[in-house]
Image 1 (cartoon, one colour):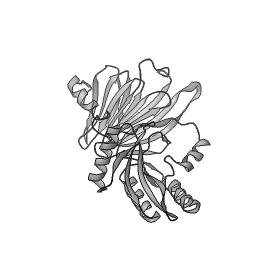
Image 2 (cartoon, helix red, strand yellow):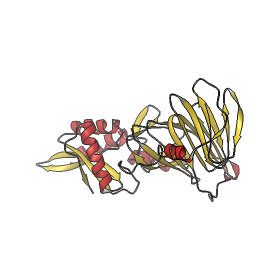
Image 3 (spheres, rainbow, N blue to C red):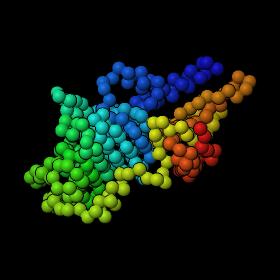
Length: 302
């Protein structure tokens, strides 16, 4: 039992390198301070780290040069060490860089949004309000954040930044820098064209945009303290277990393997997807795995 279980756990840990697992925890204990942590995920979502592409895991700490990717209908909520939140919508790509802290405790970060919707938001009374140096590049548009609430997106037609509250400085390769301090105003650069003048945004339009980065009530959500899980399948061999494990994780879901004694010295392997926030979330994910991956035996458990 010990050798077989140990082998499977070793392979599992190695394949989960960079996510949440024994090896990642050991490396993380000696790493530099964490500046970005994953607070909530509505899958599918991944993190690209070096040559690896792994499912994004709640509680995971992100590093410089990590790229977060989301699939259709996905949402991701990241928490920065200075208290702000970063939200991503569906089919988004976000690269993290320049994470750190300067003298006098100035928090630094550079977010590169290649596509999709993005929101940076923090409380008005955040104690780091004047100790932040954050730049957000949304394709061709770069915003230097000195404010509290910004929304932006990039798609096939345009790159857009909307200032909800605070102040930003916006730059574009083909135009002069623009300072924005008027709440509910936006700057848009149509693809292949010069940016348009800053204009006011209609509250209804802003509400519609904001929904693109908010967690959706009908979709499953992972939380660090989520106690529900989905039993995605049971395999009779290590080979079959690892094959199913790889298949689930490639689809953007953070699977784990749990060996179970099967009698007469044999073992079976349960494939679990943990940390779902509620039973409803687990049932929704079980239904999704049946539909997307054809896993017939999925069910919610605690």
